[in-house]
Amino acid sequence: EAGVAQSPRYKIIEKRQSVAFWCNPISGHATLYWYQQILGQGPKLLIQFQNNGVVDDSQLPKDRFSAERLKGVDSTLKIQPAKLEDSAVYLCASMLAGVSTGELFFGEGSRLTVL
Amino acid sequence: DQQVKQNSPSLSVQEGRISILNCDYTNSMFDYFLWYKKYPAEGPTFLISISSIKDKNEDGRFTVFLNKSAKHLSLHIVPSQPGDSAVYFCAATTYNAGNMLTFGGGTRLMVKP
Image (cartoon, rainbow over all chains, first blue to last red; front, side):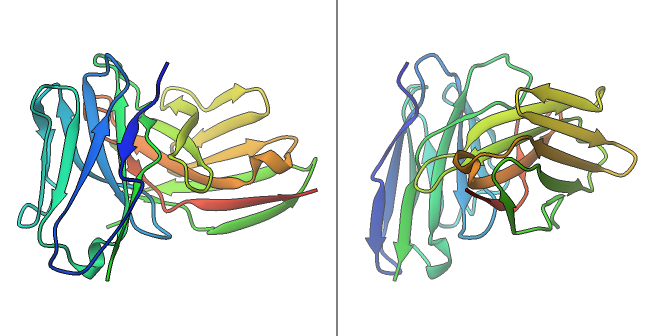
């Protein structure tokens, strides 16, 4: 079974530029999450999708971050304009719908460096 | 406000000995707890979990203990192996929270041969 795929693995941009990250979850997983992991900290949830609907985006900085999951499968996370403090690893995770436990399957992450 | 805390950023143990990783939480609504393991340049992978109706869950070399009154959980690895060297994250959630996990800051475990 293929895991959660993310791209690009690494991205370096200058502040005020824009960047987009892509995620393809495990086949059949209706629930998709984007997490931000700053160096030395634990992952922090940005947004959760159930199919193509947003379940929770309360911690997404909506003035610069946006995310979509138009067809209920792939998802993109965009940052525009980027700030220095956005330097982090962006992790995508997925889970089967209807599972009541928190066993998420994570991708390898996309590491963003903002200069 | 950090609802899940791992106060030890690192831990070093000898191969074959016990590793004990600790985690504290403040939100009494949390009723499900998980441990994730992360190797460099990889995403976290699920290791073991425990429901608040239990105080212990065991899976091979890994055992998680939950003390609800103290809002504390711990992960025991016995015996520790060099391949266990990784960052371990404690996470918590509530059953009705859509499985949104709140993570601790992680503990880097180093198992020396």
